[in-house]
Image (tube, rainbow, N blue to C red; front, side):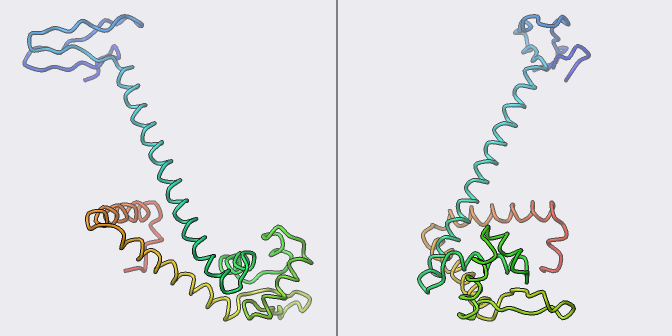
Length: 206
């Protein structure tokens, strides 16, 4: 219980709660022994809450780092499969940019890749030859040519998602039942928090 002097008073037993002096900067109140424990100053509570908050923020930061690392590892593993089939890292990056942003002009693609338009053009030429992407014109403006995913590129991306699921299944096989149960419960909690933060994302999934 917090009194008007900014001091938290508490009791064990039937007697009145003990309150400390009003003056700022005074020593902690003396504890009594007959059924009463004493008082805790408001500043002590604030420091305790601050410690808990800092611990929570630190834990959240660790989770963010771990999740980012896991996603990076899975992406690298799937990219390695691409490379083994003759698709370069840069071409994989192009496929993912087109998947995320849709068809785009060569100049914008060059900006996203941080290369010159001439270098991007050469890269797209090689990907067109392999059936990964294709060039399409804009009916309203024939001067504009867009680059978009071709059937081969879509198939390659679908295979990557399949590879990720296979990898996750193999990883899960290395865990015991108790570990799998904890992960399942944690994911359920995380999905619940996501649904609360972004309500529209959960619509239409049932």
